Image (tube, rainbow, N blue to C red; front, side, top):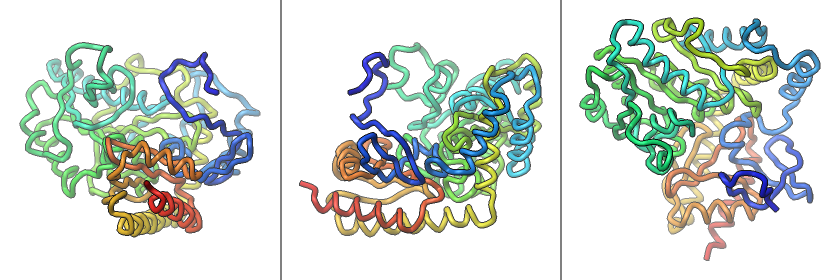
Length: 390
């Protein structure tokens, strides 16, 4: 039974997991589930990975927390490594993706304020986006269902269709501070940006003097086969939000920025009590140890293509149930011609854990270190569920 002491903000199925091992989760009764949702792209290396577990235990035996009143060695190391392997010059650590996005939204506004452009406060977001559940991140995404009952007005945010560069151009005014977008929309339906779109956004931001922020909380940290998805477009944003896979299951968020954008973030402008604590940043470094190994991201791309091809084959065999496969790397969505909630539930009953996105997409976010065996096992379950559909 679910715990009635918890607020009713979630509606989980009546399954209670006791432990995990690799790509599998096990219930208290010993039932085994293949995990192809990874805590919504969080457990990037599956469950109970020895390097992550050892690192966390070692740090837990030293000290847990000092706050940012004092230096944290693991945090400094993690920031240096993220800077080395990305466009960024500086990093701010928080505890979640929403905090990482909030830091970026504040930065876009403060950048113009410090330059004397105090009227440049509006942020342009994309329709069908998702950036978190805080007031500011909900406003940036603009989903009416998430806004309802929490605030009136737009809180300084405008919204345009994702992928429509002319709509974006028309929305930019002398009050615009910046643009936020996901290179691949996650909750909106596993929708990659159209070819050339990110480059066009980058050019438009440069032309108009506003900042470009990419939200890579779900699509970043190796999920698409590159460390961050913006790399596929050959551009560099000004700001990037990261979380989820960065901690491999331990809560951490990071806002990355170049010198231009981050110069405004000085003592007193922003902070976080727990952000960048020794436990989180130690695990973040352990995640990077694994993710930056030679050939690892090549393997993610290879496994992603294998899974995508396999899903397309299953869809071809059951066209009345499944349709097009979309996404990149190991961030994939399959269009459902049946309710995606029903598909998710039937797959779960068959011991495969998946998710949903948008109104009709089955979402697959397996661990990045999955094997061909895991792919074959998942495809067989999906195929059988489709075959048995009535």
